[in-house]
Image (cartoon, rainbow, N blue to C red; front, side, top):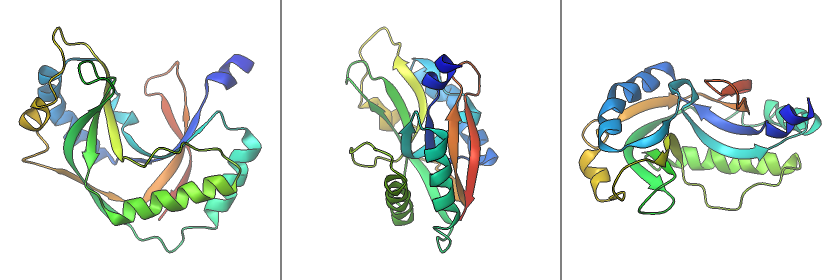
Amino acid sequence: MLLMTMNTHYFLAIGLPEAARQQIEDKKAMLQAAFPFKKWVHPQDYHLTLAFLGNAPEEQRSELTEILDNALNNTEKFTLNIDKVGVFGNEASPRIFWLGVDENPSLFKLQENVYAYCKQAGFTLEKRPFHPHITLARKWAGQESFQADRLALESPFVEEMVSFDVSQFSLFQTHLDKEPKYEAIYTKKL
């Protein structure tokens, strides 16, 4: 039981609605052909992280969900557009291939508020700037070095964005031994 707890982590994120996941899946074959990555994310696991909590004790998670139950009640729903692809990590062999969204001020305000409530519940959070993205694949597997200049040329999202409404976010638990591996254990409606 202790081993399972140590490998479990939690995060707050916007899960993608089914229609957006399907639109991404429809474009994925083209991306896989152009960008060979080792591990592609299961469509049910597509999400946009607001705050990574790590190995969060149950009491702390309960405190956070209680705070969230009473917060953000005046937050309006908003729309996001997936309009680009990008990578994180070494330029020649990136570790993360992601989908980017437009810089909607409502998203940044939501993330800022969620971050503040997590700190109020006692979480120690990353200090890196918020870079909203949806991880699509991990670990470059190409025979040649990755060429970043191909991102805009090969992206099916440049000509045809995928849009989706954000009306909720969730607290997810990770199950490393399952696929899909993320389970929503709490949801906050906007």
